[in-house]
Length: 187
Image (cartoon, rainbow, N blue to C red; front, top):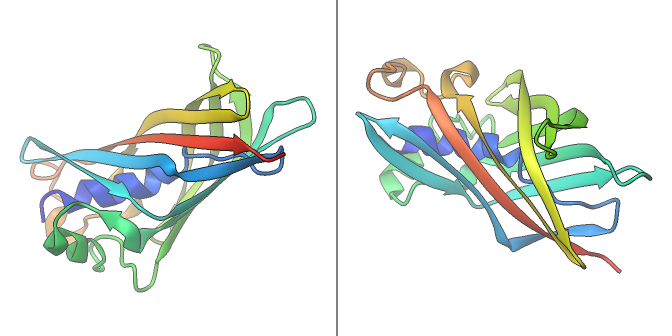
């Protein structure tokens, strides 16, 4: 049960960064894409992934990213332990019976100082909505492209791991989210 807290939150939040282009002639290649997370339980790093998510990255006429939208099925969080996976679906964690989906939608995407991008938007998770900046890199080679990045989220901001799990000396508040998404050009 110790790993599931971090894994679940990270998976949901990371979904935001994992983007796939749609409007500009790109499609999301799920088999070569990943949304992963890690956190700390009693100073031990635990990790997991999110298996079901949808991503859309749209570009304007000048080739600049204009919209990032992500949907994540919170029932698909995987911590490689069936007991932890079941616990994550409960009310103190993701309450998936009521909140089975998390979403992220950008309001703007700008170039960062390092030449990559930062999407600014709102993450909706477990009935709470908060602003989140998602940094990402875009690389294109011919008919294929990739989007990758990482960010840190605070689980308690979304009431993830509350009740007996809220003690940050046991389970850290910080969750590291990493994503890599492969895209294919639609011709």
